[in-house]
Image: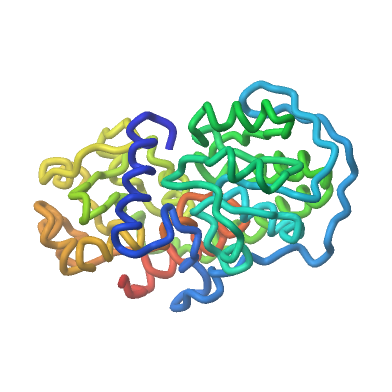
Length: 335
């Protein structure tokens, strides 16, 4: 999510999650594993062989800087998605801190160095990191400048916008860690698993229209995703049509109205699990004006995936896609 609205959504997501007793959001806790289970998605699956970094390396950061990495004994990834990549590459023991969004099991006990997505430079520097991994939305800028000024290499990774970004993000992190071969292996594994899930999509049942809804009942935030929401490629991989984008919504998110829902006419809706819980589950969702009148509302057809893994586009994307396919075509329950 790249616009100012999307940045605000992330902050609202964190605040709303905190109000409901969650660690933060988007939470990387899983829920997109084997259909009908959540335990599998609470863990990442590292590569079988632990790679040995070859350093130093100099790589280009997504912010245009040249970054030289000489040591990777102490790594601080500042997003759940980046933490997931480091751990899955097999270098999780080198991670010394986490962002609030890294809540998968292997990272859950690490100290947190962010608050509501704001980085604490003091907390990061106190851990004497060799490398900090950041997203383009990581901030505030003053904190990141303070970390750089202390001589710590900071690699900014280009954002995840869709399935095509799974490989580039893995390879960017692996390159900075001095394990490019492991990055190639993990990219291959991830892409093969995604392709295998795509083969399970029923071809004889048409293309359901699915609207991606962003819900935070505690903050009275109800939005519908458009072409720039990040969900389009995931829905297309599941054999569906992004109803918001198809109805002409070009922005990332637009206020959810009865008119917008009628125009989108979704056969199903895709939601984040904590967002669904924040409105009182499916029954509460149907009370939002316009939802009950859509084909999705009439059929109670709701696809729910845990917040942090839904749009990470990382090594667990195959699990997310499998969960979406299962719920969309096999009627898996939405909590």
